[in-house]
Image 1: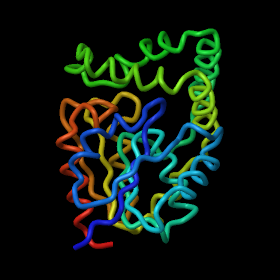
Image 2: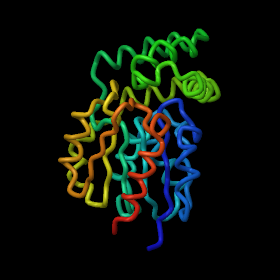
Image 3: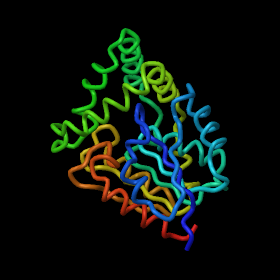
Image 4: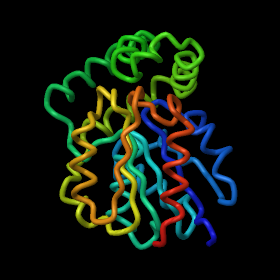
Length: 234
């Protein structure tokens, strides 16, 4: 069976490096990474992703990438052969989270991007065993700093104002994967269980000793799950 092209959507303030292992391991398929740095709304980002995407593709999104993937599905479900939602949420932002985003934007605009990253990264993004992993931490910081303060602002606004996608989940009738780290503090396991139950053809995978950045923390387990998904018939 021919593997469809695979489109990977990164998380907030991350780039193609977060999918380094998957880009190498998903042999036999055209694999591309979408650009989520240019829009101030999820709708804008989905429009740009679709403009750059192959005619039909398997879609993978982690965190913010998963939120945009749900909007891509709403706009062009006929183009999506398979869908993987990793460490993400179908919910709109809560009021306290919206307030926090504006506080973070204000800090970043005074040159404190690195401080904001470090304040949230260790306690929220990574599993306990990975919080002292300097190589992993440095990669996350490097990706974010490379994208810069303007992208932080745009992505924060897009996430702040995103639509609720819970009602979209039952419409996702292609082969699907819902995956998360068991120690994901941002998007907990129970959210992923509910998502998988709501989607007609979804498999659920929960990875032990893994936090929010599953593609970087446990790349082998994520790649294996994606390969299983891609073998399923649309």
